Length: 110
Length: 110
DNA sequence: ACGATAGATACCCTTATGGGAATATGTCAA
DNA sequence: TTGACATATTCCCATAAGGGTATCTATCGT
Image (cartoon, rainbow over all chains, first blue to last red; front, side, top):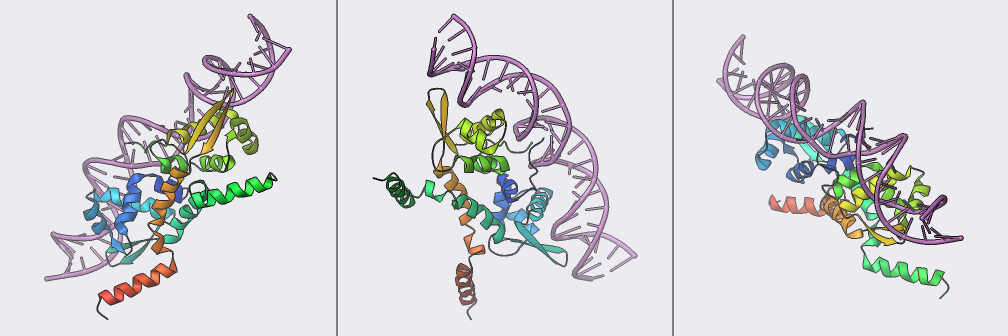
């Protein structure tokens, strides 16, 4: 079985470093493809291809305006990644770590 | 240029769905490989191979204890993913969204 | 209708992947 | 020392990837 397709889910789409840069380049507002091309300095087909992957997993959405296409980042999908990582929060949050240790101590009956 | 190696960074390592399951299977404490094998029900070499990738990017660390190897999730690396996603928080947090809109309105001088 | 502009798509190539099965390495116990 | 146990490593395979370049499609202005 080959590697999971990049279009499988947001995790795979975002694995490619360039696609993370594309998301940052879009930023908070809508962005036209050529704007992204200019700000990243990459060939236009390269940007379009990465946008296609991001769109397929729902990380961006598109709106047509004449001959332009306006891309926008879909926060909800990024939240999925955020929330997954957050389930491990106790592993880096020292505050939560102390709470956990206290609970374990109590559970051991000390 | 082929796809970025899975060992490039935590993002690529975690793209593989099975590796996310491995991290969850390890959980909060140290876990022996056979424990993970049992709880996931996968062939042992498969688990070992996924652990190797996770280790190479620093998402887990290992400690040897006799013939066993005790794996532990490294929160700091997961935090990197969490923090990256969090930079887009304003895109899904309605509270922040209102603040942003107010700022834009003000910037337009209304 | 025509050229220019914005963007997507197709094609070719090189390469690392993940699974499976078998085997190697290292450590314990008697 | 010998075998059992825990884990890592090797080999083989089919597959999809991202980059480059060229080209297609759609829409605008005149």
